[in-house]
Image (cartoon, rainbow, N blue to C red; front, side, top):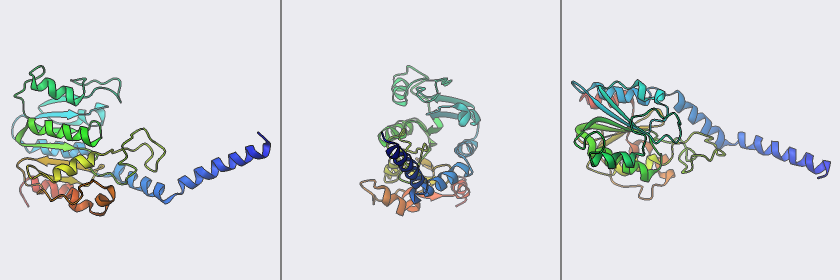
Length: 255
């Protein structure tokens, strides 16, 4: 390689990086990510609020724990159970070191806990791909009490880069932040009249499903192919975005 060619390659390398970092898509994604990272309340606060509305003892299940210090250890419930295969956190100090599919399969066969168990709140934060999240929702709805809640993280990705399918693809404006396609599974259930639903506009979108509580009526399917651009243009209506204060009022029956 000649000295001139080597210098040209170096210039190209740095100019390409500079162009990427100054790209409007990159800047927008970074700004929106920072907003989500500093938003309040966090998912922990939402879950603890819901648990506090139940009289007496409460039972909680968390799917997709990773590091328990992030959320699980801060949950205030009488009985807590955790599920995680340990792919992202090798220490994996959880109750059931299996996938959520295996957990629910074993639960149904009375191989763990009891097939008659019912939870007040089930939090889903496992593999952020729509097909898996949808299965987790179906299973969770079978094991929550009639007045219980299914809570989901990452339902409101700020950009399509955050909503990519491949988590390890860091060379995008979203860098390492990843919400996956959880939003598609949540939106699918927004179209289902069997549940009420809303998404609290904080912490990457905290979705909540309820069989009985009037937290948000279902809507007709106006995004049948789950196009992100459609979501982005109609977030508030499609996801039923609400503030935490409005959500608390709905749960407590004040609105």
